[in-house]
Image (cartoon, rainbow, N blue to C red):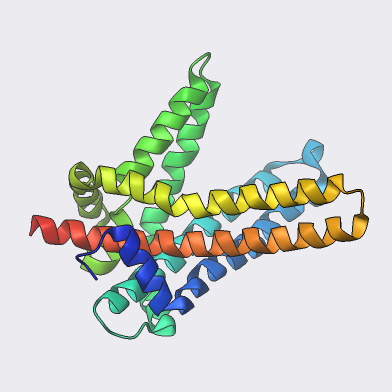
Length: 248
C-alpha cells in the first residue's frame, strides 16, 4: 500500500477499516459537548453582560476542545499506523495509549492554540490585518502538519517534532497541498449537490419535498464531513510515514 499515491492509500485504508470514523465522531461529540458548555454562560447572560467569568469559560472551553481533538487525532494516528503495518486497529487501546501520553499532547495543543489565537489578533492591523492573519495561519498549518505523527509515532519531543515537520515540508509540500485538495473535492461536490437539490425543492413550492430534501441534504453533508475528516487523518499519517522513509 505504501507504494501507492498517499490519497489512494488513504482511501484504501478507510475501505479496509471503516471503523476509523469513530475518531472523527468522537471529535464531533467533543465539539458539541465542550462547545455547548463553554457557550452556556454567553447564552444565559447575553453578550452585553459577559464578564470575566464568561470570558474565562470561553477560553477554558477553547483550550479543552483543542486538547480533546488533539487526543482523538493522536489515537487515530496510532490506529492508522497499525493498519498500515498489517495489524488490526485496536481503537480502545489506541485511545488509551494516546491519553497516556497526555503531557506532550497537552503541550502541543496549548502551543498550537496560542499561536492561532495570536494570529487572529493580526486582524486588528489596519489595511493588511486579515491578509496577515490568513498568511500566518496557513504557514503555521503547513509547517506543523506532521508534528503530531512525530510526537505519537516516533515519541519525539515537541521541539524535535516541529523541526522534523519543517524539514519534511520541503519534500511533502506538493503532496500535502494537492492531496488535501483532492480529499476536499468530494466534500465540495456533496455540499454543492445538496444546495442545488434544496433550491430546486424550494422552487417547487411544495413544503413536503422541500423538508425531505433538506433533511437528506443534511445527512449527505454530515456523511461527507465525517468521511472527509477520516480520510484527512489517514492521509496525514500515510504522508508522514512515507516522508520519513524517504529521508531514511
